[in-house]
Length: 235
Image 1 (cartoon, helix red, strand yellow):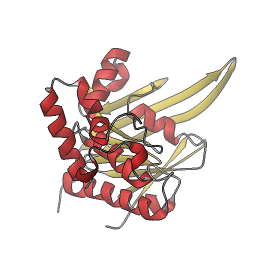
Image 2 (image 1 turned 90 degrees about the vertical axis):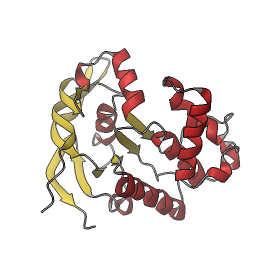
Image 3 (image 1 turned 60 degrees about the vertical axis):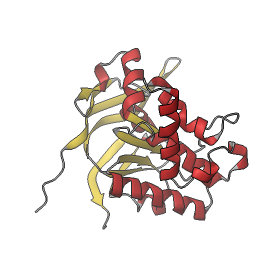
Image 4 (image 1 turned 120 degrees about the horizontal axis):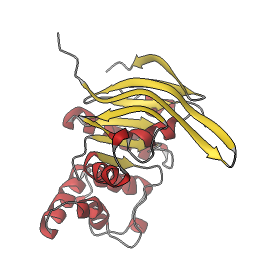
């Protein structure tokens, strides 16, 4: 029998509120769970359930009010803003719904962006970016600008940018939400491949049941509370 993989992410007793003037809005309540190394996890729930907030916390974009989040051997809740920015640059790849590409940069230049925070030379940055684009089958589009590409192609550039630093985890916030069905299926197949063939740990927020079915594990949030009966998708 195959031994279960140890968790790459440990989330313990996380609470998060937002403040609007004198109003306190609770968002997450006592969230505790693990994400195994190499897991493909889908977070589902209705609008306002706290999915994106939880994703932002484990990606180090936001900070919890209470609780602990450990990624690898680092408790990111103890890091300063400067330390957190450095940690994010080296450990997290981001895939957004609206791609977030820089319009005046070519595809290869967009993919290079995260590498400017590393010690790689200019030539090494370009080589890494070209390799990442080849991995998403876009080497023929390296010198094209975002406006010259379809939505699906732009999202593939965004995936190349997310994996170019070989991050510990990939976080995806509604990665197919702005795509037609055919393009969405291509992106989901690519994410499945990154998980299965490269062992990438992926956490994806989605409201689309078809997208969620591509993940190995489903977890549900509702009004800031997590259903702890995670379901395993058949592979």
